[in-house]
Length: 538
Image (cartoon, rainbow, N blue to C red; front, side, top):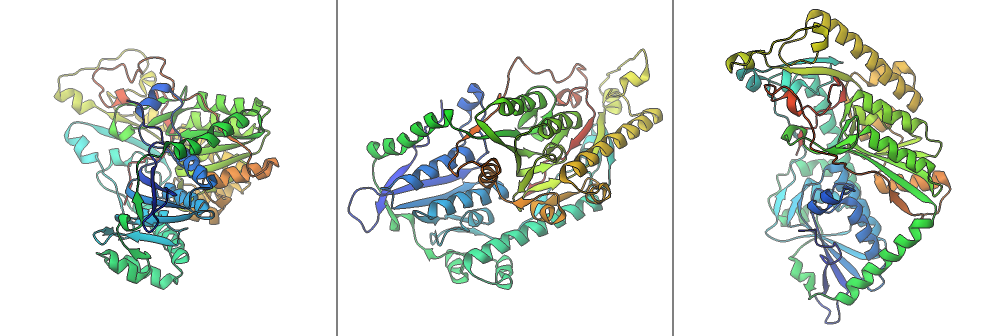
């Protein structure tokens, strides 16, 4: 069943003290809000989650609708990342410039509060679930589990902070990974407290006290100044039945805007979302640790070339939400970005790290959310080793020919000669990565070496270090692109991309005994500019 059109999902209402016709709209915020919907027809039909892109268009139509006097935004079940939550807050702030906007929070969390930073009216019911504990991260390590089942993991990396494969090769978090995650969480809390303190008009010390207050009720939140009122939503807006006339009125500007956008000069958005691989973009393998779309270099480069050739496109926004992947694919995309003669503005999503940073380093301007995870300038080579697994299960891989041709074989560990060769490849790839960043960001190579070493940074810290130009989200990046191209504030925006291709069932491996190797999404490539995204930030 196809998703219900977003406009029909709008609930109409009126002020609870007004007996006239509906002049309020109730908007429900829930889910993860991925930035873009797949361009593939099948994927679009199956994807029921609203995108950030469609939410932005929906709120803009409400902003332009003259009959709308107010919008009640109900936030429940919001699972979006911190960068997305902040960006949604920006959309609501823009809407609040013209319309009265009231946020209603049955679940008061760090994320739901972040969405309300631009609003003056924030309401929670008396029975609201309250959880404002700060941030923490959790990561599962599989080293001992895999070892018990006869699986070990080769993990060659540059340098000490590069932790892409450590969840598979180790049974616990090492000191370097703990250090960088602790620093990221501290930066995220600093950013959250800064934005909330400014929004609520309190000093930093008062805001810090919120995280240690162990709030349990909406009334405590009101007394602390985190919300403005304790009330139920039926005390704010009286829901009414469907009003198709006003629904169509909201739809009409969208249709006319699309017609105008086809011919007008504007901005092209090229998404790089998911693990970066060579070839075409496609769905990822059906494995939890590797879930999500695959951003193929062939597809992304083709989209960049189309935007470059299109006379209507005056600037390009490269939106990156990726922890990287193939070093080769990242370099191919980065080269296409560097060769664009139109302004390119890179915008980071939740994560733009390792290969995700590689691809955007040549951009003219780079924007990040303060909550973005970025950096991780480093590379890894690794593979699962199934020697004991094969012995336990009566599997006996036999080989002939040159051993070096079996470098990627999961039947055995690297030989000393192979390890030396791999280390040489790693250093060459890492050096090229550092060079690309130094050139693109116009930083001394020695400075990039200091910032690299595989270490992650928050978007806020990355700006201070010179890896990012300014803080902002997709809407800010589009505004920057319009300015660089000399376009008006309302110049149209088009998403360019071939979407997810399904030429046939993907082949994940040839060795029937190698269950883990069979879902490896990088084919025969073993040099990765990749950051593991299995870390859960709560």
